[in-house]
Amino acid sequence: MNTWNPSTTDRYLPLQTNLTDSPPLIIDTEANPQDILEAALQRIRASSDLLKTLHCVCFKHGDVEDIPHITHALYLLAQDGCDLLQVAQQRMMGWKAPA
Image (cartoon, rainbow, N blue to C red; front, side):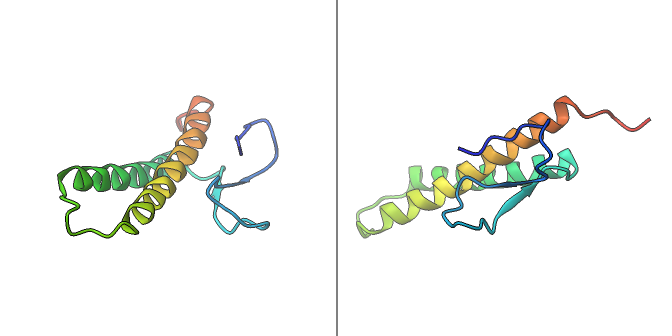
């Protein structure tokens, strides 16, 4: 599990959803905390919207292969959102508003 420690010098934090040796998707921990928060909210809203759609959909005409595809997409969106929220929270806790 990748957790961000603001006292380290690692500027770029790999997303937990990366499955490669050299992670192509990263969080710039020095980005504006509000931008990080907005990116997190976009992913969490998308996963929430998808769950809401699934709640309303009938699976009578669906394929059994659809379920793993949907849960994988939900996992990616939710986990990336959580990773971003963690960094935003840490940044905002230590963030000082411009004078």
